[in-house]
Structure formats: C-alpha cells, structure tokens
Image (cartoon, rainbow, N blue to C red; front, side, top):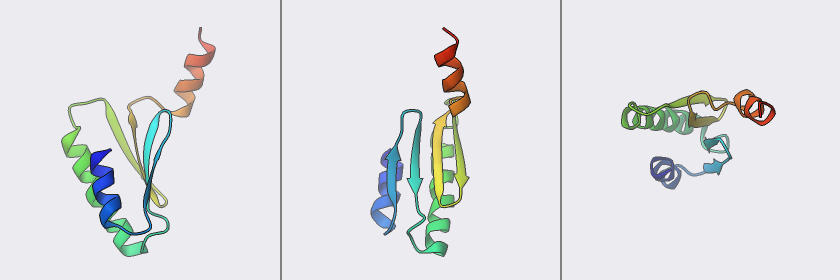
Length: 83
C-alpha cells in the first residue's frame, strides 16, 4: 500500500481501493498519458519489491491490481463452497 499511496499523492485523479482479496490503484480520472505512465512505473516497482512473494500484479483499463497469486474471485468462491 505505501507504494500505491506514493503514486496516488503524485498523480491527481487517482485513488486506492482496498477490497477483500485485492488492492487496486485506479487512474481512470487522471491525465490519460501521465496516469498510464505512472501505472507502468508503479507496477514495475511493486513487482521488483515483492518478487519473492506469491503476489501478482495486473494492469487493466485505468487500474493496477495487486493480489495474492491464485486469489481471484473464482478461487474465493471455490473456498466458500468447498467446506
């Protein structure tokens, strides 16, 4: 979260969404070019820092998502119904 906060502080129009299984940085309302550039830079920093952990990052349309590897919505549902 500190890395995302750093990029949020320096990129107007961005915010962090803390979900149950993901941490998402939204830049849809930022300047399109600057937001995209910042997203790529942030993703690189996160991947370098957390490369030894079971974490994956994903860049979508106006967002960067960080989650535990294998912690997608499907795996959460599997765990709910697999008891």
